[in-house]
Image (cartoon, rainbow, N blue to C red; front, top):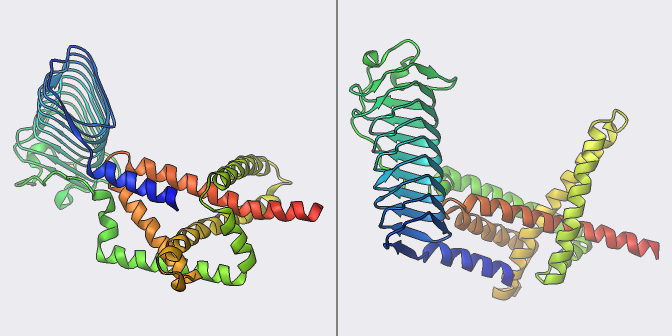
Length: 383
């Protein structure tokens, strides 16, 4: 329990109190930023490599930009290619070469000297694109000052182009695109499209990943899932009290148990993967394949239920021991895990990666705890 408390505390402190470090001295060479929110006040003469929650470039970068993280803002000119992967990007200066962006929301106020490749939620273009424009997004907005001199390849739910904007190349629509007012881009040229963009939406400032869970429908669905999971936990503990207690004992938060569970969980995962591959390519093994898949499903389901039960029991026993019970422990554990998920998702850029890694680690650890019970039973039977 203490280990998870420390993890949650560190995540909260890191995300809330991340220090912004200004880089104001002349920068004659490349800049590398890792894990520190930064404002670069002088021009970078070389490349910029950044992995951080927030990076702002006030003057410009002479060579390539590589950004992986949360928010990237550039006020100055970027003289070569730009590679972005994160939550929010707002480029106010010109870009001389190609742009490759995989971000949730992006806005380009300056001219792009070559091609723009974008994949994400929303793209706003307010100046020229001298090459081709490739977009796979939910929303695309092209403002009146824009001139796309190449082809426009688009796959989006919403496409809005100001009547004064100009697309000089071909407009190539991928299946699934719905143009505003149901106008078919393949049948209309720019001057024929009766769509006016009067106001651009504001750029997203973060926390968009957790918003769907905070709507009324999302909260009801989340509550139903938590309640159902707590009921399932209570039923399993009531039906198999001895086995459940042994699994929970194997999940004690100390180094010995954690290492043993992870070791067995990793071995089981690797062996199961190999077994599935062997059975899937053999006609004789097909009947066994379904049996193994069923067994994997049962073990993984038990593992996913026992972890919140153990987590909730540790907390309830320290706060109100008399309230401890299978249902209460399971419900409290589920709520704590949801809180941990929301904290991780609120971390820009790397939150989803941390959540995936932590979930995988918890799953392997829990599977190891369940399998250890069977291993101990087998050893006792051999004596």
